[in-house]
Length: 402
Length: 88
Ligand SMILES: Cc1ncc(COP(=O)(O)O)c(C=O)c1O
Image (cartoon, rainbow over all chains, first blue to last red; front, side, top):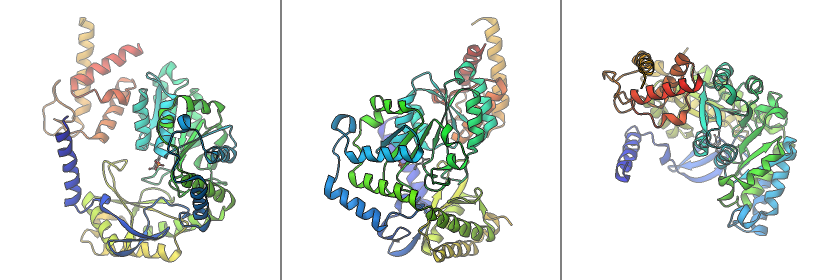
């Protein structure tokens, strides 16, 4: 395909979004007012589409930690850890992650996307087999592709389908890698990790779990869905990001295998990119400590989840899953989703518009992410805005059940 | 190709036609040269479903990475035959 053809293809996508007045890429937060509010198109807007699950981005402590790192360590690392050396703060953060998960090895990456790319390409070679949940994030698909391994999707959250696929791999199933997530970011459903692990172990395969959306949110200590499922010590690799509950930027992997550290010598997404900036590392480290020492943040989050979930349910909306910090409202058509999304924006509420091919099962979604930083009044406003948006539509009956 | 292999290929092809007929075919006639995306208009979700049905029907497992090299029904049939060979 020539570049001009590619431009034409992309132009087609852009104009389709423009015509439907549904281009999420046009949203600009002109001024941040807090972790849960910004000015968008000059309007004070409640943010319910941020992944800022614990609402830590404006905490005085996180800001002070970042400022101090900036002053003491400078604005950037200007290089890769393997070529240009690690800062003590990177090493210290890895130590904290290993301690938190009670494992011998932790590695940090410049983003969560790169953590998945780095682990998958570091572990897998051409001809290796990897079986992934069909709803996996793009970084997991891309990591599989880049590794050159043979990869196979299994039906979303379906342990029996995983078993079938591993069985068909025959002898190759032993030592294969199975990849799943904890909390799925679009529909807000969680993986049946205990069952998936059982199948994985049955075949002598390895399990990797991406807890990008579940770190700080699930589990008694906030270690994710694997902790909540009681299988933390049996998962082989856990990846995640600093960009959601930790309110920073960067990614990590922890493992019960000390050999994880060997990937430093053979993972290109780790080696050939600059390490995270000191301010990012300091923010992530502060937030990790905060998650550990403030379990009440999770209580606040879950109480907000309950309020939003029941509010939307009472309005008759079809929701993507059981209550979780991702509350996805299912709408019948792309156009309908776009219309409600614009109505919400006009009334000062920002959520995520998710339409195919970005949505996992062809659904059109209005995805809300709940934050511990939301006040009960803000949640009330969000619910009321949804209520008004459907009462103003001619298709009110078409979008909702009940 | 041996007669046996040719028969097997034909059998696979017929099986694929049956499976494909359940997808939106964009009113095209299913032939060996039918392009799954350009002619039939299958999207990525359709392709995933198709893949799973093919796997169930032939009791094989098709790597998603080989799917990117597959354009036509013929490409698909050849790949299924290759995978069946690997298993036996
Ligand atoms: C499941 C999952 N994994 C990985 C990532 C990537 O994280 P990051 O934003 O740090 O690159 C995301 C975020 O979009 C995600 O949803």
